[in-house]
Image (cartoon, rainbow over all chains, first blue to last red; front, side, top):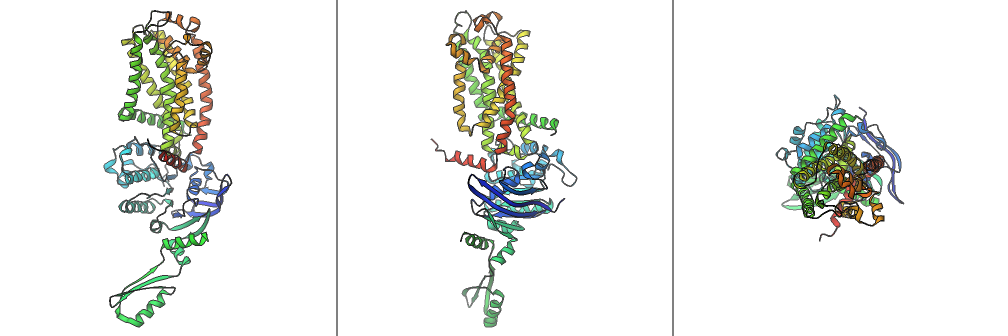
Length: 291
Length: 282
């Protein structure tokens, strides 16, 4: 298997006279989890739909699993998993019935490395829907429906999985369960994942690498830590002395802390050094771009 | 493309969806209501006579209504299914699955054909039991079979075309309207011989009239041909017109369907959904 799962060069998209993507470049390596971030209207969904082969492009080169998505055949399609923002399909079907049926489409594309499809019951257990296996899909709650969407997305054991805002509308518990599921997928199934999200904590938790898309351009590309370091060396130091709280922003957190101890010694309590998190970085990036 | 596998998947899909029609109560209710209305109308017509013959109008209308079911349950049935599946993303799911679109279409054709044929068998039994004059001879059964096969071929591809072209299920009512008009000029509930000549001509362009005529030829005594246009069942013409519509539909439907499917994407489904939710509820 190639080291590169997807490669995008000079991708442009124009609707009428409006340019939505102004020539973007990025690469997704096999086994990587990449988060695509950006404000609404930045072109995230357009980008992901072009990679999924659901949308044509105006210009540029796109290769997904070694194939141009515009000409991807059924063999290529069988190696992808797609979880869109809103699925309401197959409402009258039952959970197990649908997973079993959709799994059968992948049977002829199985390889020793990727045996296909995933057993329906095993998959149902993996996404925690065993109690709902015989329920009609229309009766599932929002979180259950979303987990079913993920199950359908991976029933063919995809080598590359697209997740478009997978946890929108989840409560915190469902969100955490979903994150565990993605970790399991990438650890055990060696799947490559491209996800879009508005939840920066989610991106920080799941992604090996973050791409920030704004105004149809990629304005940042790197691991969450790299981006945080690049954007701001500034950190916030909090501590208490004699029960009194102090907060001090500084560019030199280590030097400042050393000075603090030199001055107060053991009287320094509750010391906290907080570096900019992905959310701070993201806000700074987008703000900088918009100026 | 591995056709045996795809065909098997399509048939399985059609079978599952057919079973849902009989076990999902909103669907069942719709089927029962629709059939119930037809049966009531037929019974109301039973007491009336065909103009110029001493034969029950209800017994003549019953085969005509069977013919009509190919257009309303067949063509418009598949149109409604396709529309709903585009709106809720079922079609996009098929597109995201390897070989999914072909199996999807085979499934829809299977499901719709089965519903039409189940209705046909039920109506024939009802006619034989409750409508004096309705008969099924061996020759009639032969006619019934080929008219039914051609009827499915002539109507379902057009249902797929219409379902691919109209932008949302909201337009379904708009599509139904001309079909209601077509039923009125196709001699379904009232003989075509008693409407103005130019409307007779228009009615004979479409398959609905010929489906009704073919079914009457299959299920009514031969002497009743005398009240038809030309005083004959005109079976060669029934065959010819239905075959022409079949060829046209089968030639055009795959391209129209492919074009529609190519344009489906997650954001299109989401946009349709948003529009549907913005619609004021009354």
